[in-house]
Length: 197
Image (tube, rainbow, N blue to C red; front, side, top):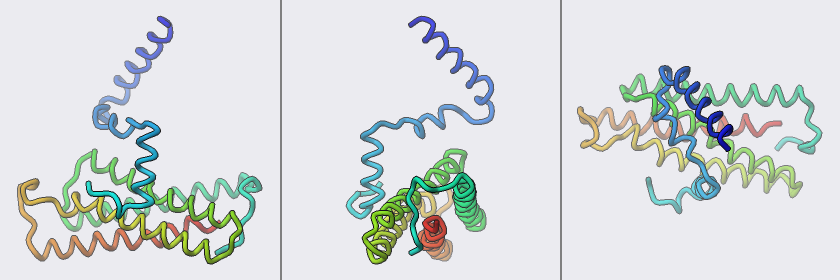
């Protein structure tokens, strides 16, 4: 027990010394505070976001995917996440939406939520019930993800007047609302690319 405690303490000390200057550990802690109930709650919110109060290609068996296809798939997924992230960051820059390191981490986390809908769509396709179930599942997953992002990014894009030093004028608000809807609608493109096997 003592040896285990000293190893954990040494690991924490190493991380604090080497990464503490680059990324404040206190900012990251809430991103890694995950339990089974948290995951189930998050999945429920992602699949049925309107119930939460705010805050077809041919399919192969999943076991017959070659390592080359897996490298290609991982690269495609990384490219989609980076494109989505850059689109949102550029929009925030041009619309003068200020942010912090915590906002960047939140945006990266929001980028990953589209994979829940992609995985569910792929599972629906693998079940072999036909193209119509696949299309319905994809459409539902897209709308659920878009709705979730609209609600989640709203506080960042359209902050309350009391939360900002400078209020948002009506023309800025209109551009920000349009940007928010563009972010939500572009998810159909990103998810469409990801579900293609």
